[in-house]
Length: 315
Image (tube, one colour):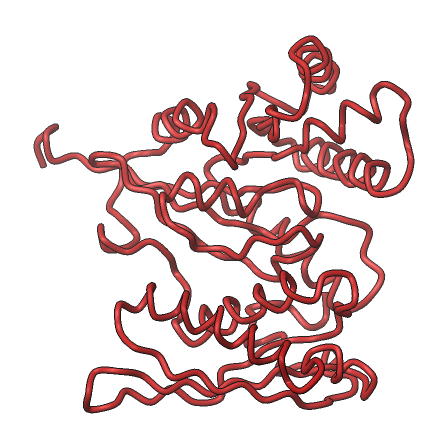
């Protein structure tokens, strides 16, 4: 192989507290949406691999679940999946919500900011325990003053957990190209793991379920319980080129069902329309989407559900 043909490829784990902007950053780096993004914390439940191509270098970005204090079995499985992604990575990017972290640094603690700071400290401690350093990506810099940003960067860099610091805004793209260039430079020589035109390592049935789950979170806001999941029951390619998809939204309690369905079925209809529109765009063909809502008490304690998501049941 000549130097001209030499390829480089590696894995980058994208870690951080829930809602720090990990999924937004992965989507920005890939250039297309591969991971769902909502204002709700703990949205990503399993490792999603987005593929970034830059010349003859392939960077596989592992969007990990948020690192937080686990309370339930599902929480523990998600946190373990996050650290597993870091263990296998050639590089680690720790995404921190700069605006929230700055407020804590100035003594304005409380609520979600305080929890995010605790989660950030967990990542720092985990990196030290694993004898690893990460690239610190201070996200949402468009929401913070420059002097406050510099003070925050210095404070976190002094922990010794980071090799370097990048200041970015995943939402508007500021600083993302510089971070991408650095990740490309860190990748070792090797053959590509995925086809050059592949943007994600995620089965379409699972991706379709994730898209619908995103619309659920975005539509019902705070009323929606976290105790729900979406499964793609059937995927039928039709002769006219369209696809018929049937999905079931599982909730854990009978009282949760009306929240998803809405008055006269309007909420469910809207969710279906939004999901169908995005699926049609992604698949570049007509999609017929049918949604059902069922009560399944204790679904989050079923071993099969964890296997389907690539999570470890006994974490």
